[in-house]
Image (cartoon, rainbow, N blue to C red; front, side, top):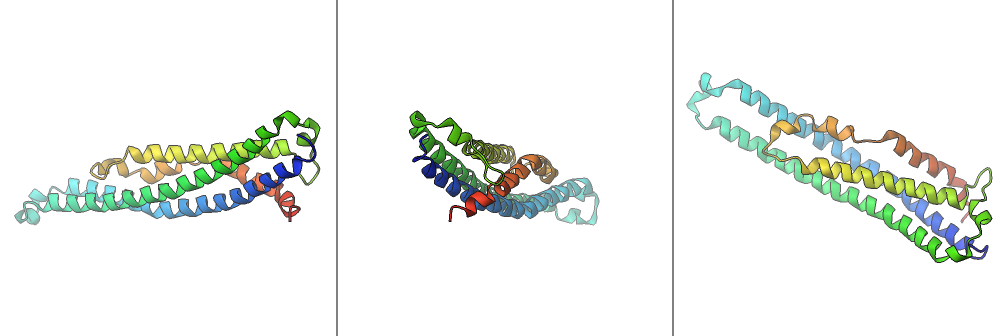
Length: 203
């Protein structure tokens, strides 16, 4: 990459990291909105288990022969509403994933267009406060991979859940949280910190 094309790539990197900063915040916000929905699903599953253990036919409530079925129906309805809300949140997470992916693709497309004029020294040159172009491109790939994997794992989990199978929902919150990758998320935060001066220097 010639020195004349380097500024264009650096500007594309700035746009990508600025977008990544917003994407990270949006992902965290949507994820926090998922938490109470997951807890509520677990509570419905616990209520269903408790209802099954009651044996209404042996209690004074046996005069209402369809009571258990009606209560179960209500629980399934409530679970269905919560699962629909979770799927809506997944659409928001997908938007974050797509945004990160599109930004990274744009940077690499620009890189490929200038590949024949690559100045390896310019692309790998770094200072104490500004990372090299090569470092930043690798970091963007890491971020894209992280959010893509996080989205796909959560999507796969949700696809296994059905409102009428309440017993599978009792541990949903723990299963969801087990998909988190704290080290990868810290890596995203670290890279944003490392490029902070680079972003500011771009005006």
